[in-house]
Length: 413
Image 1 (cartoon, one colour):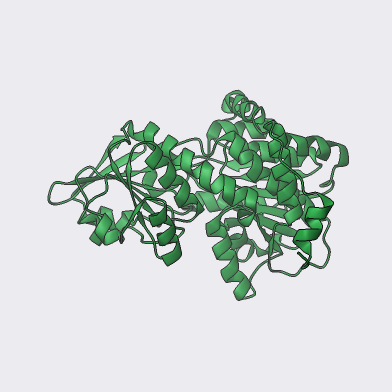
Image 2: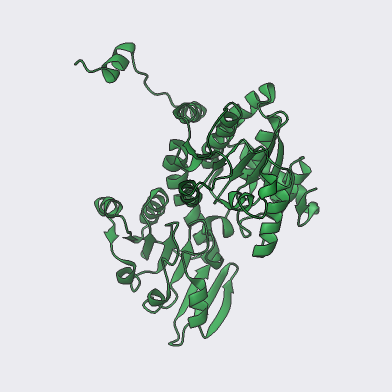
C-alpha cells in the first residue's frame, strides 16, 4: 500500500509525468519492446531514486516490462509530493513524502524493501545499506542491483573490498551514457537552474567557486563560465586540477578561494569540503550550495554553532549571521541543490541515464552465477543507448568499413 502525502495531488503529478515522457524517446523505444517481451514478468523491482517525474517514468517503463515496481525517493527534500501521488495513481507502489525527517525517510525505504525485491535500483547506496543491516531479511531473493551515482559507487567499492555486498551490483554511474552526458550536461544545467530560480540573483560578474572537477564539476564550472561568472576550481587530484587550469579556470585551495567566492558549489562526494575555517574567511552574503549526493559537503552544523542568528531569507534559503555581522546563505539545507531547490536534470538528459538503468536491470535477469561484486555496464548497452539517442535527435554518424575494423583490430599497417 503506497505511502504518500496527499493523493488529491495525483492529477498534477500525472501531468508532470506525461510531460517528461514526451521528451524521453530512448526510454520510450525500450518501453515499447518491454511491453512486447515482458523481461521482468514475475519479478519485483525496488527503486530508490530522486522521486520526481523522470524517475516515475522509469518506474512505469519497468512496470510495462512486467515488473511489480516499488518506488521510493533517495533524498527527503527531492521528493515531489504530486509526482509521488501521480505514480501511485498509475499503479506503482510508491513510498515518498517530501521533507520527512531522517527516521521517516529510512522507514519509507524499509517499506519499499518489504516486497523482498529481485532487483534494486539505488541512488547513493541507501537500499544497499538497509539490506546489509536492519532489512537484511528482505534480501533473500535478490538477483542484483544498479547504482546511479558517484557517491553510491564509492560506498559499493568499500563494501566490495570488505566482502559486504548483498548481491551483484552494476555501476550504472560509470556508463558513458551516464557520466559523459548526465553528470556533465545534466548537472551543469540543473544546478544553475535551481540556484538562479531559488536566489533570483544574477550569475554574470560573480566569482563562483566549484569544489571538485569530476564530470559533475566540469559541467557546473562550464555553465557558470557560460553565464558570465569568473570561476575558481578547488581539487585534490593533480590531473583534474591541471585539466581545470587548461580549461581556463583558476585553481586554488579552498582556504585560498574562500575570501573570493560569491557563490560556492560543492560537488565532490566527500565530507567537510567547506567548514568552519572557510566560513570565517567568506564575504558577507556569500551563497553556499551543494550538488553532491549527501548533505555533508558543507558543514552546516558547524556554521550553525558559529552563528548568532539563523533567519529564513527566501524559500529554501537559510541565512546564518556570524558574530561580526556577516551573513552566509545556505541553499536547500546543503542538500542536492538541483533537486531540493529545482526539478533535477532535464528530461532529455535523464532519458539516457534511465535507459541505462532499464537495460542494465534487464541484463541482470539474463545472468546466472554472478558473484557479489561490482560490475561495469556492458559496452553493448552503452552503444545501444547512444545510437538510439542519436536516432531520436535525427543525427547520423559514420560506420567503420570491414577494412577499417581489420586495421584497428590488427597489427599490420
